[in-house]
Amino acid sequence: MNKVILRTSQCLRLNYSDFLTTVNTPQRFLFKRAWSTAKPNQEDKAKEEPESKIECEQKPTEESAANDEIKKLNESLADLKDKYQRSIAENENVRKRLRKEISDSKLYAVQGFCKDLLDVADVLDTAVHSVPKEILDASSHPDHKEWMDFYKGVTMTKSELLNVFKRHGLVPFSPNKGDKFDPNIHEAMFQAPVPDMEPGLVAHIQTIGYTLHDRTLRPAQVGVSK
Image 1 (cartoon, rainbow, N blue to C red):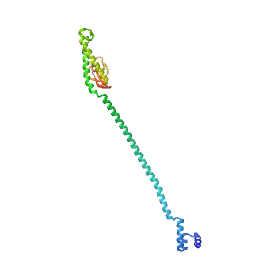
Image 2: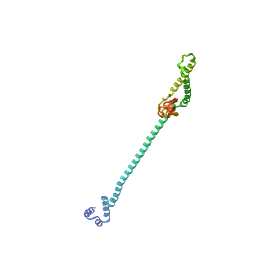
Image 3: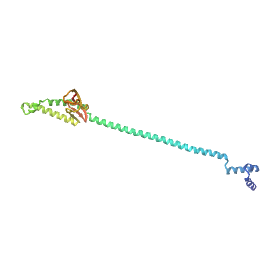
Image 4: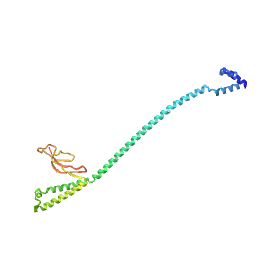
């Protein structure tokens, strides 16, 4: 064994191939094993280097794929958030419209009934104005007592009917002569030339108008100058 160690130390000055020719087969096997354990061969190094390069190349690729996936998820989240907010806004608008429709239906539920009663109010107004002015001026005359009772009765009935209208939001309005014609609250029954009056003005009031909760229920019927 000592001879083998001595011979091995002497052969360190030689190259690997020359040394193999100077030792016998068993000794050559032991030396090969020691050499391969102590120093990896070039082929193993060549195999390790590409693997390390592949791992380094795979890391940036995986990071890029992860970043792309995160970007897609953020875009999807932003899109869902936008749709959610739009849905909430749309639902709120629907609720507002429904509340307004319900409120309007409560306010204007009596619209048709009130419109029918306007004819009764017109008849009472005509009855009040049918009493001659002379009778009203001489109301103390005993012959005019029946006319005065009739006038008072019709006036009270008309006043009570207007109070009922007012409680339900129905209010009469009457334009004045010389007012500018407004198609939103006036209905032109005729046009006629009127001296000393510009065209497009109210020249005659035929029937008063009514509003229901600030909405024109019936426009005032007027004559317009031209």
